[in-house]
Amino acid sequence: MISAFETASRLWDEASTRTAPGEVACRAGCFGCCIGLFEISLAEAVLVRSGVASLPDEVRADVLSRARRIVAESARAFPGDAERGLLDPDRTEAADDAYFEVVADRACPMLELPSGRCRIYAARPITCRTYGFAWAKDGAMIHPPCGLNLPGASAGRQLQASIDIGRIDEGLGVAGEIAEELDLDPDVESTIAHAVVGSAFGPRLG
Image (cartoon, rainbow, N blue to C red):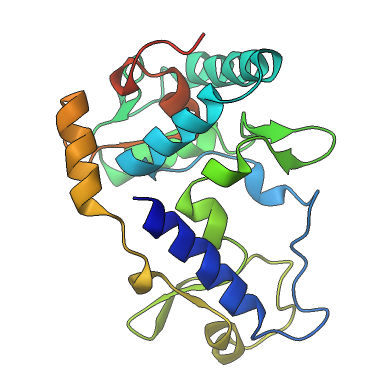
């Protein structure tokens, strides 16, 4: 599992070497990509939860409070089991879009303000590790880069500096072991907020 996250971080670093000065705005304290929630895999949810568990008591309490607030305020729109923290694998695209629109303006509970730093940086999800550059698969761009990066670049230039997500090993074998231990389907998805407070991922953190 860890290898997948290390690979994601390495691919971002490799992509950055294919850019010129002034093309990349990503830096400590820039947190536009930390606003809004998104789906995360079971392996990511477990890593995020372990990161929160290792935080100092006061910091962990703040993270949990913010996560619980997001979960409670968006529970009605959540397309799944909000208490367990599991998205419904059979949810419709419309339900998915409606929910993520509701939480589009919510700051990630891991975001430290006003510094803009991630409180679980070493345990952040793959999406967080690869965001900023375009994502590509099989030689085609499937997600554009952050609007602050590669300003005015053509699609070809964006692809040149993209991250090939096909190279990221999701660690399915380990995910299967985790799923068996938690009595979950290995393909379940959650969000960062639900991962730390959902009952499906282990005992209550605090």
